[in-house]
Image (cartoon, rainbow over all chains, first blue to last red; front, side, top):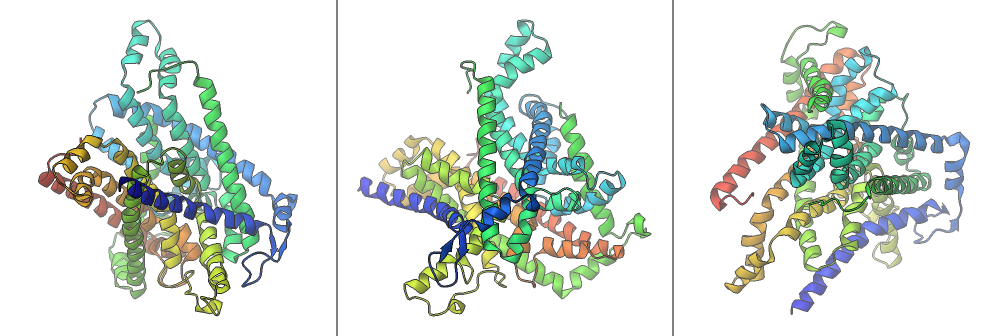
Length: 269
Length: 282
């Protein structure tokens, strides 16, 4: 009886995974389909026209991809830089207006980014931040901050500050204490926060599009026209590259941070 | 320590909302509008076009979020029960989160449009005589394409949030209930559900607010009319006549207002629930 139940649940869970994976397979097939008329279930002719277009220098795809990755890495770095101390304060200390600060930090999860971007656009134009790399990075911070704080605050709540107290007692100055004690302890949290923030920034379309004003072109932006015009083959090629690029970036970020902090057991948890 | 984050949040997020609010009230100095008025709100709220957009937006967000929550909870339950942790859970949770909405749109388009894979398969096995017999799920007035795209992204998200809580529920609790004669359904409804309810609520709020305020998916897959509110706001925004800006901002403010009301209801509901079931949110 129990065995049967477990099998049914397994079947459901595996079909869910299949429903998520099959569309990816379909776009892989479609990216190689030179000719695939209705109602054929398999393409009539395979080819690499879409990939040729992607790699041709005229399409600017590679350079946009690299630019986009750099932009999102910048956003990730700044987000971590400003949210690590804030998360620590929210997790471990009591101060006046803490509740309000928390609500404000999490609010961008709820409030439409469209409303925020249109509201701030005029000011960004005045400050000459519109249509610049810096302006786009700044506006990307808004949707990224809440995710990072949610993760890091949790981590600080679990580890507490007893290890930093030890460091302090043993004579480390605040900077050393932060680099050699705090950072290694929270590194698992940093890895997950960095991955999520990178993904959020890398997938961003509307904020870049409005604040970048067509001068700052990121990868999702060069994809849009092909999706709109229904050019399935090219859109599929771009999608595959998007997925591959974000997987590679996440993997290498994970490796890099792990390697950097892998110096033994840090009593995490 | 919270200064840098607050500078960004207040300097961009809050200031952006305030400037939007001012412009929605007709205060837009750059083009010479300086009189505070509620006329723009009145005009927008009276327009038929706006009401149908509001209805369309609410309909898409409510339907997609409700279905996502129900199926997401069931999926999480199935994953926990099947003991298929590790890889399986990883695939189900990580894929949709790392795939952006633009790519999800292409997947839905390639699979479900009238020349997509599904109608082809149906035709091949003889279920379908012509592509036009397949319901048009893209650019349709029922927003099916939009809803399906959101579901594809959101069901695993809800499942992930609920899974973390489910996986941490002490097994003894369910064992005790089973021992006392409860059946599986009763255990789920009276033991497990109350424990995961807070995370279900917060997942619902997040996906509802996201889909309600998002631009990309309805822009790519939605019908020309009705448009969802964020798409409509952008159409008003890019009008070359700057005096049109307040209308865009009114729409934005209404979207923001509805999301805030929702969060407020969430906290109220929370209090109400804990009053009746004891404080389980430890």
